[in-house]
Structures are given as structure tokens and as C-alpha cells.
Length: 245
Image (cartoon, rainbow, N blue to C red; front, side):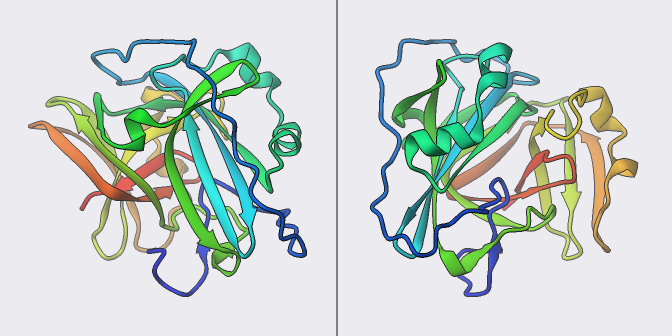
């Protein structure tokens, strides 16, 4: 669903439950730090672990969403990640809410980026450094607080997800025939989710009428582009898919 439309849209990665509708305080923001952690991006990103922290800030009648990702900095070490608490981070950052999104694993093979996707500021969350990779701004009346799968949202980023020839890909198809290609799977709902489970994921999904799930092996390399905007959906397990344009 495009953000230019006037009817409500769902903030698919975030469930904004405390908006403080009477407040008009200025946005605090996330302080930048110098990057001291480094984990070179592997030549093949397939099944590489990462995590995200997603703060939501109130600015008058707008919500400013910032997406931070561990890519190129670390692999989201388990102990400090489990010690992060959404409520504590929200208070620390003066945010309406902070969404902890992970652990996740990439299913593409290579990531090409531009703009903030490669040069975004670095922040520190409980000793885990992350880079800002995307932003989203919307009005209060555009928010649906239900975290409903299979509803499209738009995020601002410039990337190319590259899937190599011979790679197995996982796709959702909506009733219009639009294809959404999985970019990452999550261990949020099912902590034991892995690549092997993705092959048999279809019967486990509560697909809306007219939707389908399929897997296929690529006969040639595929580049999934986002030129400033990416259209995203999630399934019942919070696996994330990007619309093929």
C-alpha cells in the first residue's frame, strides 16, 4: 500500500501503541557514535545473521521512523541482543516506541546499496553498533496499530538485493499477481526457523484468500532493486519480502 494514499496504512515492522497524542515535544533522535566495530561483508550474504533496532519518534502530527542494522559492523551477538529492552531504549531515546527486530538472516547472496544504505550514521544500542539504513515518515492518522501480515508498506531506501544463479528463492504472490521476494527470514515468532524450514513454509502460513507461497531455483542471476522506495510485506512469522517491480 503506497504512503501517498490517504487511507490508513500499517507500520509493518512496528506496532505503535503509545503515541502520546497530547504531546508536541520535538524529536530527540538517536545520537551518532564513531564506528569501532567492524565485520567485513562476506562475499556471499546467504544465511548471514543480523538484527535491527527501529526507533519511532513523534514530531507534532508526524512519526519519524529510523531503521538501524548491524550489517558491516557485527553479527548481532546473542548475549547483548537478548539484554536489550524496548521500553528502556524508548525512555533513553525519548522515543514513542523502539522495535527490536531480530534475529534475522539474509536470503539473498549480495547487497548493493547507495545513499544512506551504505553511509548512514552509526549508533550504539547496548554495546551493539548499528548503521542507519532506512527512514520512514508518516502522519498519525496513517497508522494502524495492528501488526497484520500481508499488508504492504513503503520504506525509503536505495538497494539492490542480488540473488545468484542456482539460489533457491521464496516468494509470496498476491491475488493481482504481484510477486514479493523474501529478503530475510526471522527467528522472532519461531526461534528455530532456518533455510530448511522455508522449503516447507507454505502449509504453515495463514495466507489471505488469493495469496500463494512458492519456492523456485533461479536459472539466472536476479537483481531486486529499490530506487529510493521499497514495497514490503511480512508473513505470519515476520519473514520479510520485497515487491518485484
